[in-house]
Image (cartoon, rainbow, N blue to C red; front, side):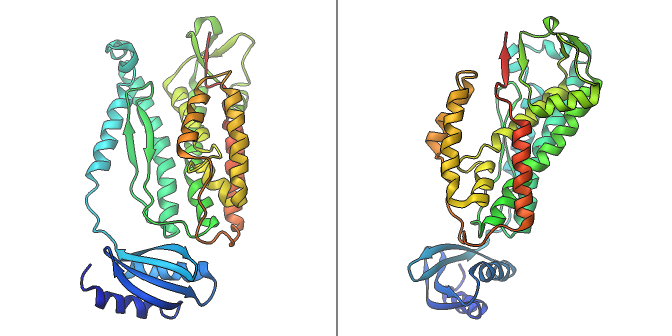
Length: 352
């Protein structure tokens, strides 16, 4: 940091009307302030973050017995996102060639229409993931949360990816922001997944179940509703033929559902904590028991249960839990609950 003494004075004068600053010092590349807000803490912190951002700084806040500890540092110069672009390109490749990871040959490209099927699947799924991640990104930036661009994760599995992650480089100030940022991704991804799935069902062939593959995809309430609305339902003993659009839409709903599990740092954990605060931990424990019971139907739930034990059930508090969520945030929270219920797939894969 350039001339810490001069920067300390600059920051002091920028924030002196917001906080009673009892101490200011420089430590480990940061200016540290001990301060008490003169008025509503959330409002003061919001104004502070805007002022700091305009001046080229970012602030992180911690509770302190004497008020707040505010750590301020220069915003790192933005670099061209080489890593993000490389991972995105690699994910497109692994999505396109996903059948290679379990067929161990390229025969899927030699089938009539094989190349276009892979293009259709790749484009559909990447759109769902992009809308999900940029839902988080755009709302986060709007709320003053410093967020990275999404990092897509290529993977040698049946869909070619483990999804994507976004790094939050600043804390959530209150429960409103937590809900809005957490819910924006699943809501955006859900809309695109529903559109893709609807298109897939509209064009899909209906075939006898015995002609289909030995493994079938599990249904959610939404899939049953869409099948009824789009095609008037299915005759007994028939199902939709497997298609790239149906599979991409189904994967999109599965990703949305898993992200909305009301646990820890998942989107669902963010939203639930924003809605009910400290009671999120109780709901998470109940849902963990539910997952373990579901594991007898599909063992994959036990794997998710193991991750829960590793990464934790409870969500950490925001800086101002006392501020209740806004009506808009509550609406997004309730919408996320509805999406979770209608997207929930108890047994994702049904093996005959």
